[in-house]
Image (cartoon, rainbow over all chains, first blue to last red):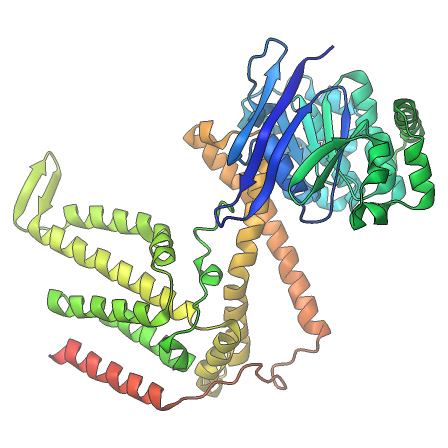
Amino acid sequence: MRTWRILLKNLGLAFTDGLEVLRDISLEILPDNIYALVGPNGSGKTTFMKLLAGILKPTRGSIEMLDEDEIPLNMRREVLLSFQNPDISFSHLTLRRDLMEVFNLRGERLEDIWARLADLGIPPEYVDRELDTLSYGWRKILSLSEYLLLPSKLLCLDEPTANLDLLWSMRIWGFLFRERAKRVFGLIFSTHRPEELLIADRILYIDRGRIKEVSHRDLLAINNDYIKAMLTPQMANILANWDTSLAEELRYFISEATEGDKA
Amino acid sequence: MSTFQGISYIPSLRSRGGLLRVLDPRTKLLAMALLSTLIFLTDDLLKISVFLILLLLVIALSKLSILRIISSLKAVLFLILITTILNSFMVEGKVIWSWKFLTLTEEGLRFSLLVAIRIIFISLFSLVVISNIDQGELATSLRRIFKPLRRVGVISDDFALGLTIAIRFIPVLLSELDRIYTAQLAKGIELERLSFRKKVDFWISIMVPMIKTTLKRAEDLALALEMRGYYEETRGDLTDISFSAWDLIAIYFLLAFTLWVQLG
């Protein structure tokens, strides 16, 4: 069932000093796909996500989120953006205080939040613990749990597994996929890790401000040093044979493998 | 681009050279301190207008873009407005207009105009001076200026270093503030629709991560200084500064100007 879509038409963004960061982007983003956004450093990935979250406004073209009756939705509320560093997103010393603050500022009621937090697999003793005393991996998970609890339709994650080891990266993905198995929400993440391309349904490839939606196989044909550096022969082989069932299988495997994992 | 860019005029406004470059940074700092004090010591509109002519001259010599200078005034606009409004109604004298407890007087208007001109002069003059001194020069001049304090037991180097670091870190902290601000907005908080009380809550909530990251940064910086073997006794200067004939001319001029303002 399609509940919303985001339409981008000839979208462009130039900063006041004339620097054109994004140009000619026409895309349709749907809730049932998980999108991986790939491109070199400084190619405009974060800027693109800020546009989706309504923090920046395009200087050219249009971007809108429409529900099933084609009525525009408020993207500032419906699209959330989580940055790499979880520490800048916490405005209080504990998760409980921080959640209360965000819900207060968004004008929403907390209701069964604490029960849902436990459902997500957050140990109850972490809710009141000072965030500084937790590991980086846990702070990242707690920060993401806030985004999952806030009512929204699309989640943009800016390099969610940057600075994390492979095991913690799997825990992060397992955490997200288990929730996504319960309710469908849009997911876009940026990454520099080739193996993370395999868990996405579609790939948004960004190069010098232009974004194209490509399939996994299309990536192999792109003549670009950044992409070439990502593709070892083994990876190229997997991508050539990639299909949706592989992504689903991997997501299921990661969800299962990290379930109940108390780190 | 950045929400807080308007405030960060110190690093973003770099002078492209110009005649002010030939002066020693200490002369420029002296001029800044002296003229900023002097303008408060006179009420004479003729003398004040000479200050303004001087300011225009300095701006012309500094080769700074006029547009950027004007946009940097935005930061002090609020201060100017508040002081002007308060002063206009608070000074007693010949009443021009009155309503209930509010009375506008001729003296009040004159006084508030003077204060506004003074604030504009001080902010623009220091802006021009600061954008004509680079960081290395500033560090060296502060060290040399504070050197005599050693005789009374103040460690001048630490003091100068502290001041230099504080100035150097304004842009760093502003970009940090911008990142935290954006991260908070990205949770779907619509700042423009919040009530005043909630807006206050929002800004307070930004301060927690801000203070935390600033302390972390200070710790990193202290560690970096330590690792590079920083000791005040043995340190030298990266940039050398020295007085020239131009400085002598400038100082004579400042002296004459001071005498004229005070005695003339």
